Length: 296
Image 1 (spheres, rainbow, N blue to C red):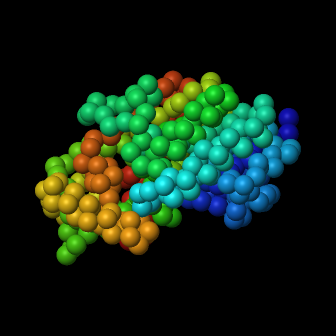
Image 2 (image 1 turned 135 degrees about the horizontal axis):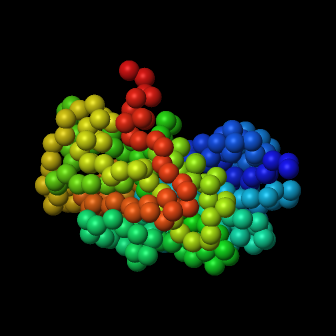
């Protein structure tokens, strides 16, 4: 049989580029869709906010194009995220027709939870424009029969989001973190890429994707930043976040610190990955592997 022709949206981004390379490495013919070229295969321009994607000649769609981040609060940010994460999804699933679709979502869709592991049945309730619009996009994708993957805090070489944010907490050769240490799930980008390729054959539904074990926040931040950790009272950090968010409303630039960012660092979020494991997927990379690969 000829190799699968796999369309990868958002292939110029951090996660999308890793997934596109993994698909090519697995022997697939890759078609990269996005506003910028992907790392391999055929390139097709697609602006998710304007037009349906050209999926001509493709067999499978791995959808990673998304508006991401923690933007300034307000209607403009919500509309910009909705244009990609919801309206773009509607265009994608219509263009996909009967093709299998793997739609990469986020654990940011979940409502706040306690310390127990979060299963896919946990209520949704995103706290930000990103979380809310990803949840709305999910509903469209699941309604069309897609497989939805929910990674949390994806990291890896070239990561433009998680690790730079962690390094911002360093002050005076110490990492200042709010409140006591907590447990949290992280997702190596290679584990997400493996899941994207495997999920082509999974039943429609939502699946948590994370590393095999939960980590301790202080250990991760200390190792990533190479400095010791000092705990700061949560009310003090929340007060600073409120000031920075108020300033962001005026400047219309992302706040250096937000209440959501504080919540991410103070609320335990551990994903139950049993549903994905039951399909035969298993995470092969860990944060320790990532650190070992970094130059000295």
